[in-house]
Length: 382
Image (cartoon, rainbow, N blue to C red; front, side, top):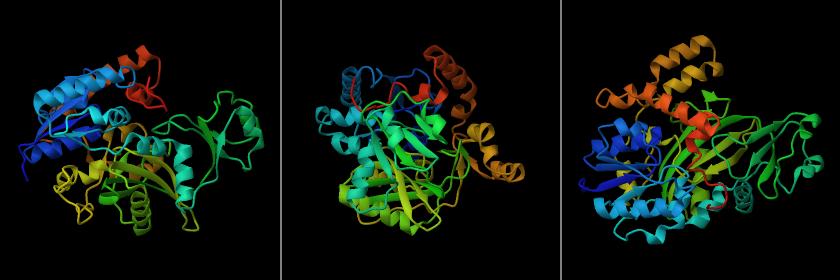
C-alpha cells in the first residue's frame, strides 16, 4: 500500500482522533488535523504533521468548509476522515470537495435520517427489526396520553452522549416537563437488559470492519469508559442486515439492549465514529478499509486488549463495580492516551483540562456540552 498518502482528520480534540492519527502515522502516512479549538489532545502528538485552527462548523459552516477545502488543496490531502458531528456539515457540502480527495462519508440525507432518533426507529421498524415502543411528541400535553408504564424515557431527537435524556419515574415528573417542541422529542419505553455498543466501517452496504463491546464501566450507565471486544453473532447479523438495506458507506455505531428474552433492540444510531475505534485501531489492515483497498472480508479485532479512559474511570468508573474489581481492572486495562513512544498527549492532560474548564465556565455549560457545542448538529445548519 502507498504509505506516502496524506490523511486529514476533522476533529482533533477527541481520543478517537488521536488513536486514528497514531495508527496512520505508525504505518508511514502523513497525518493532518483540524479543530475549532486552539488546544486539543492531538496538538501534542508526534503523529501529527500539522494542526490547523478552523472556524466552528456549527456556527460558521460555510467558512469551515472553505477552510477544509483550502487545506486539502494546499497540503494535497488524499483522505478526509470526519470523526464527530462535523460530518453533517461536510456531507452537506461534499460535492464542493476536490475530486482527487476521498471523503469517508455517505450522503447527508442518509446521515440525517439515522441521527434523528425518531426516523431511525421508524426505519428500523420498516426493515423488520424489533424496536422499542416509541412515540413522537407534538407538545408537553402528549405526555399525559402515552401508552406507557413508568418509568419511561424522554429523548431529544437530535442529541448525543446521553445528553438531553430524562427518565420519567412517576406522574408528578410529567408536570415538570414544559420544553417539548413539536417533532423534536420522543418518548420511549424504559428497557432493561445487557447493553452493547458497536463500531463499523462500511462501503456501499458491506461491513468491512466491525467491533462489538459491552457497556461495563460507564458514566451514569450510558457513556462507556472501557472498551473490550466481544463476539456477538446476533448483533453482527443485525448490523450486516441494516447496513445492506441502507447501502451505507462510512463509520457507524449502534447502541443495543438485549433483554432477558434474548430480543435485541437498537435504541439509537450514531452515523459517525464511535469509541469502538479504539479497539479496531489496533488492526493494521484497517487503513485499507479507509482507502477502499479491502472489500472481500470483514476485519474483526484480533488483539485481546482492553482499553480505558483512565481519568473517566477514576471519576466515574468505580461506581459501576465493587471497589476490589475496579482496582484490579483499572491496573489491567490499557489507557487510551498513554503511549511511551508518544508521551506528550498524556502529559498535556492537566493543561488541556484547565483550558476546557475555562471554556466551560465561559459558555456556562457542563463539560460534555462544552466539549461538542461547536460541532453539534441539531436538525438544521445555522
